[in-house]
Image 1 (tube, rainbow, N blue to C red):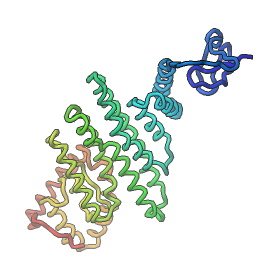
Image 2: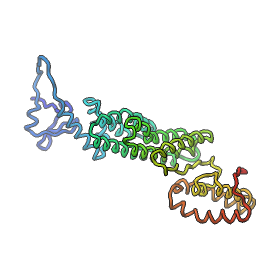
Image 3: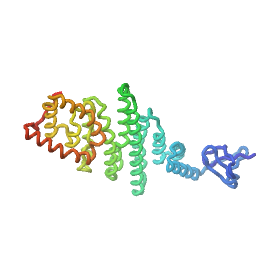
Image 4: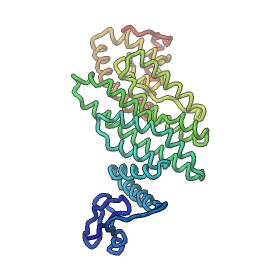
Length: 351
């Protein structure tokens, strides 16, 4: 009996099902008439130069890959884009999505590696995108990559946070370095600012800025797990990023940075006033150390405050409603303290 060879993947494993012939390897379906044209029998001896037109096969692969992408079938999408890469190595789409969909299926222990692989491919992918002559299409592709990067960086970051929070507190310290690495690599996906400007100059500066902002929002979350010395280095790096963004968005300010246990306090006031070292917070810190800490009930209040406020600020400190909620009562408290002789000059904490 003559065998049927799938024209898409080359497999001979084609089985008749429900009146159609179905390739068991790639799932392509053929009618009876189409299947007859694919039948092979014995060895074909071809002499001379033969040019094989694989354009139809490549188009079918793109179609299958894009369908899998739309359906969020990560495994099939990765498989088809890898097949496209063999036949079309200069495809930005295949170079990007083969890695993207592999990253989408990574396990918890593979988060940093998956994020690193994706961020490392961006230089090459965006260089290929620069070859697109139609600038309207080119912008659409750049924005598509940004949206995909934003989605996967958040997905991997949230998975890393949930995993770390689920670790028993008694052994959590053993996994801090891995957690920091996960956060750092997730932020790198969005820190494509320099790559975009390097390849396209300022053509897509708006996209570059959005990407940098998203990267900062993830990057800042690892500050709380660092040593004080490393915190200073990373905060200075974030400030450099802030200055880069300000060249295109002068109103931009770094979001609130939570320093964790190394932060000496006044979490809510720092979030509201924007700095741990400002006149209002200096006043409140003096009140805390010189008045509240002098009584048992004041110390109880301080203990309760430091048990609750870090979490509140971590989750809501960047929101405008949170700052509005606290600004008026804090302003009144600061004014009353100043009237009672509490200074607002630079202050060094007692503890």
